[in-house]
Length: 175
Length: 99
Image: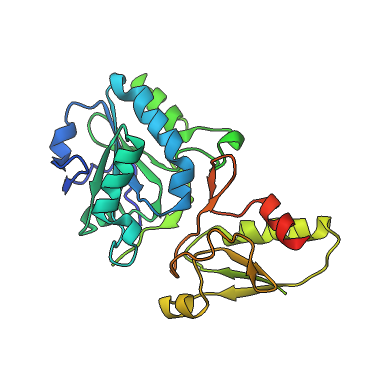
């Protein structure tokens, strides 16, 4: 079961595809922190990938940090290995950190269930939005951009118009 | 025979089935869709199941490019000609396989 709204960001220290270890403290200057349960192999992730990259780029200079986290069991899903993560990030030039949660500790702490699945934390690192990036994996059919609207609202000092939605995607591949 | 093989861990098969039924109706066909749930890695191997959903018409995969993928309990990736990626095959792929 996923963490409740208002819950503090779980602490973590995980290796990133950039070769550095990243902890929660690394993002202390961010106004908003979006942890996105992520992976390489899932078609739902791939369908939303361009939109997540665009969002990360669009808000980077406004203090919003997007961090993708792959917690999948890479032994059973080799596409999600750390090496393949590095390849994917380099190939697409990800504008966000991409971390490998090999122990699955962060995914368990978040109560993550799907990829992609967004956990958006405010400046006090309290969960303010949880769920899908928007309401359709088909970009042409998107009517509501949940994550963008939540980010815009929080940056303006308002409540996100929608705080929880159902994440549609692949299951997290537990060990 | 039209088979739809699926894995419950992936949410895409109801959408694929609905689209397949729609395409069959539009083509004036009343074929039954044989639904086969794949429950284990061993079954995925035995059935040469490269991911969910997999649709075969008379034993032939409607997406020949992806048919040879590693057998696995996973969501299957469909690549469309316009570069988009989808967890469900396109209407065009279904129509081409059923004509």
